[in-house]
Image 1 (tube, rainbow, N blue to C red):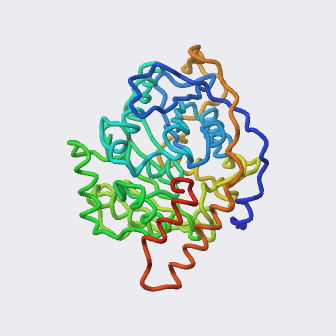
Image 2: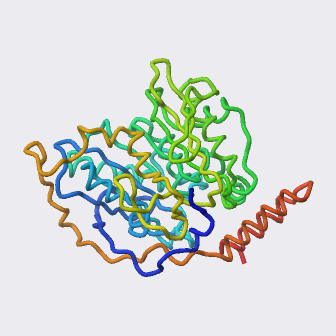
Length: 381
């Protein structure tokens, strides 16, 4: 098992090569987001679609390079869709998972992402039964949003270092959820999802990942996400299965038919970021960088497997007759992007020291915590 905290700073700051092409004119785009896609040279007639949402300070191209999703798409023949935040919407390029106008069905950023999905489905003949979404940190919290607001669209999701749906509806509440966590009953959490749409099932299967040493988003949030989605699925609160994968504990919750509908990975000793296994073997993908941590397990690969995207029938073994070539979109040529910018170490240090102060003092001055966090994030002078 590799040390994770050191991996947070051991990265190459050179610009990452972009494999993504931008698409414009995909809809009214009320959230003012950018749409970028990656289409492998060969895909099945009705490919799956994976929507990927980056974290704060990151770009779509940087996160793709680090997480290895486009390499997985090449291997298994599915299409990628990246939504990218813009500075004009959030100074740290975080998705606004804490703003009511962006997290409700058919509004704001959530609607923009939904429009991107529909455009990709129509353009590439995507199988509507195999659309998935994943994201890190703010992107993980927005993944919670997309699963709750559009459970009729997504077959599954993966929330990495994220938060439960509607944990916050304001900036102060967002920092409170991140640094303290918010405890609610499973029914209360589940009701927030059920109230987000008129959908009543079936529900997306959900994979939850969190580092036990995360000082940016408190690890207890993973447990609250589990409570939310096990309640929605109507499964017992105790996991049906527990095992160890690549040295890390994994738990899974199963439905009445024995199907795994919720899973959780706790990456012991890992700080805030996406877990990677960087190497040359067939289950290693990506490159270490800011919040992209080489800890010996590829979350991207394991998530794809949980969704059924790595089944033998999915894998392209050479060029087979049943595979058809899908031309790259001609709407816009791929643009060069910067890799995820330099890790904001002062901000991370502020988070860590603030969390230490929280654990050392009682009662907690929540107002002071939020004010300091807002200043650290550049959202308050």
